[in-house]
Image 1 (tube, rainbow, N blue to C red):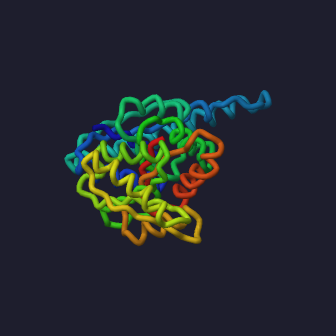
Image 2: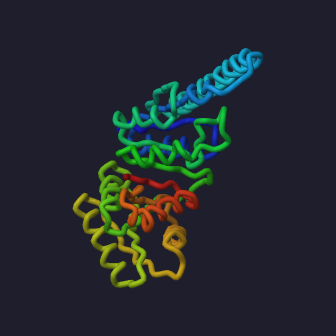
Image 3: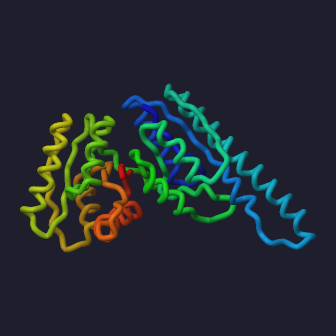
Length: 276
């Protein structure tokens, strides 16, 4: 198994590296660290005066040199840490638009690891939600999004399951890639009717059983929003992982479940495994 770990300087990426190293030892897996130099945005054309063209060229060259230097440093630290831990690691530096370059690499890897607040356009922008969301929508492979906060030590995983194709795909993918191994797995369904929630969660457990994973159904009835209800149950279970179906294509489904995906990503304190 190969895990693509997207590197830049945010605190959430530092946590993503921690999680990747732990997974590499447990599965086991090879880690491929990827750093991007966002050359197109750094040298993007802009109107300048005749006298300003020379200054802009010097500025662009300095930004490119700085971006390359940071990429080299991140990759060197990543490789050194992996080798010191006895983990198989490789380094890859690419230039280009971050989302496109990452998506080009996705088919060659089994999992993608992202910090929640990744910013591959750090030379030109303070934030970069576009790249993260584009990867989540188009990856076609499982993506693990990691927040900057240290996750609870518990190995349990909570699968947020509504019976949809996206949720079923995430559930199956989590089991097949080996991440459910040696974990307490809980399948949680939120519904106003507790019996309905239990029935849907039980179906999710049955699907996991066919894949060799034992799981416990969790029917969640709450006056809170679906996001708050799931996060509260995750905390009560001491779960260190949330598994979730990714962004969904239809406008109606996106209003219901897609918003939950987005809200959970923004507020979770634990890594989220998504498969769109």
